[in-house]
Length: 389
Ligand SMILES: Nc1ncnc2c1ncn2[C@@H]1O[C@H](COP(=O)(O)OP(=O)(O)O)[C@@H](O)[C@H]1O
Ligand SMILES: [Mg+2]
Image 1 (cartoon, rainbow, N blue to C red):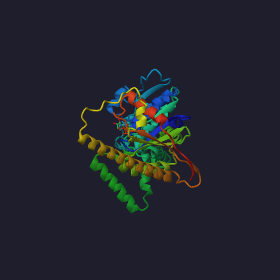
Image 2 (cartoon, helix red, strand yellow; image 1 turned 60 degrees about the vertical axis):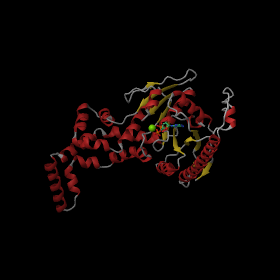
Image 3 (cartoon, helix red, strand yellow; image 1 turned 90 degrees about the horizontal axis):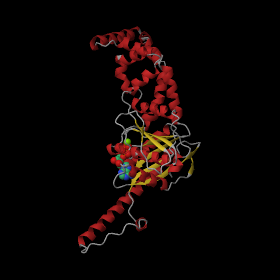
Image 4 (cartoon, rainbow, N blue to C red; image 1 turned 90 degrees about the vertical axis):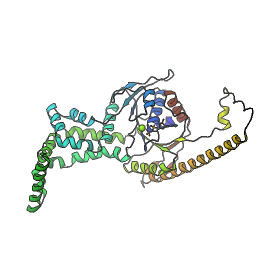
């Protein structure tokens, strides 16, 4: 299964609602890639403390670190912690033609107030960093984890919103506030507008109009570089070698969110390559037990209390009920996601590959645990059929 996702892929993005296992699976996919002999980079966002230790990630965000892998792994794995904070400033510095201009943008009070909200900048900054890593010839596979609460919307919309802003005449207008007033048609509206702005400036102590126009004209010289990068990001997200894995859980409460997520993704013209249902309950069957001949079965207790038998039977029934409920959720997910991904009428669409990963105890937070999950992933039966939209 895993090979079908990784073969021919340059970038693999793990998507999905919070807590479904994106970070864990991104780690598993990257170890699997390294096992294929590839030079892998994993861009991780919010690893749980123990996974972070397992990958031996440094505390500082934005630096690559070589993850020590078992000897039988042919490839390499470098991990980097993504951190969006402060990166927008850094980008402005990098793309500005000179230092003075960069500082003028960065010190602008209007910029200071809007930078955080700039076109969903967290998601955008993650993509900005991705663009750098993709350009780095040291890696031939890049696995990307996505932020905990990020919606498909934020991630795929951010570059387009930046482009829309840069291509609009908003900046041009802002650089000459007098033209904003010029847009107001009647003399009365103009009068009211300039009165209100003047009052705002006096009351807030902000030199609002002057700050906005200074920002807009400074920004005009940074804009072409921004535009070029946003276009590259837009194209990268839709490239054939960029693969999307939607993570899902078999929890009935999360099913609707997951289908909605898939619908949002499809709105942006992005096709899911795989859906992975994580933490699926598997009851131990005699067949799986017999694969471990080394482990001797525990000796039966000398006395077998009646209550123990009753409790075991009750637990087995409960487990079976949970398993049935999970099957029902997985079926609902399949039909829900199939219907959104076949929404586009005239082109032939591929139904994503489907795979299930077992719930592991203990949770896979060590390198061995992640490796085990990766092996389970590799042997997970994948199913897909071609459908006509
Ligand atoms: N297959 C699994 N079996 C057991 N625990 C898992 C499994 N996958 C993930 N977990 C655990 O679930 C929690 C959430 O996983 P994480 O990868 O951080 O999710 P996300 O990045 O989507 O928020 C973590 O504690 C992780 O160790
Ligand atoms: Mg995560």
